[in-house]
Image (cartoon, rainbow, N blue to C red; front, side):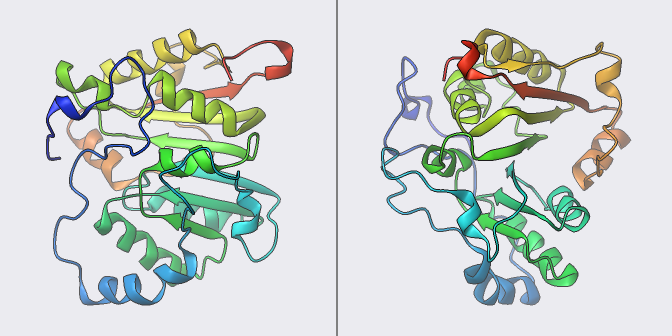
Length: 254
């Protein structure tokens, strides 16, 4: 990832009108087939966020992104190569899936999986997930995944982590009461960071069990290429399932 000056970060928890996206958006040159899918398939499954720099616009109902209203809507933040999202979409054809990924190479890989498996229940947004979360209607998402996010290990870069009180506010706002927020990381410090932020936020319950339990993949888990690499290097993932508390009961900040 490419480091940006820390001066670009907002101070004091302020939510900027235009969010900074840290890191590169494109890596290796796309294969011919992938480049073609970016031209032909992406326009058919892409979500364009109207007025995306104005979070106070009209809320968007994510069910309207699909040809037919799905039974539920699940959201993945930063889907990487798309293996998990494509697996879940194939296993749950009556669920609508939204994936956000600003990294072009990852977007192209998911498009290839959508094409190969004829997945008609996936929509994508090639930008910072927070921009779309800001525009979604409250209590409109049933499950939300943040899987192996960039840990930004240097202490001076910790503010760039996706898990923050501001972003947890967004997650809490869009999740339905009882909706699941799954966080997975192989970085112990980021796991502790997430547990602390979620506890201080107050809008979520969980995770249940013990730290040993958190090392066991959930029943519906699908291993990604990143996870396979981490395991080869001796790092195990921690699988944390949080659940949105009922805001009407007075729990949570949103």
